[in-house]
Length: 106
Image (cartoon, rainbow, N blue to C red; front, side, top):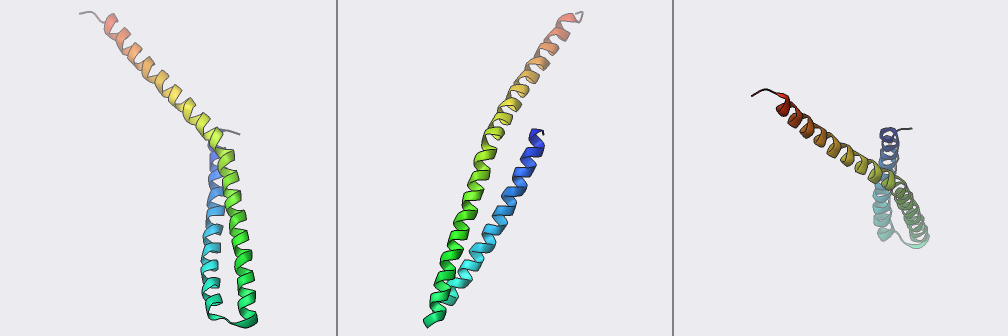
């Protein structure tokens, strides 16, 4: 599997986790608002739900971190290879231009 395909897969997973994380954070805000208004058993239930949501958010963040840690080495390696290729290409263009100028009659 080439680098581009791997990067696209990682981006897709990252977007998926990012979207899920935003949904959970929005839901947490709603639950917190409801918990402030509730009393008695409802308040206990909502605070429990809030704790569960925080745990789910932490797990989602951990998954995002795992994906990023998995992607970073390959990304760095591919960027280094691209820079090296770019330097070689520029050197080849300079050398070719110099050789062309040398070969032309004046």
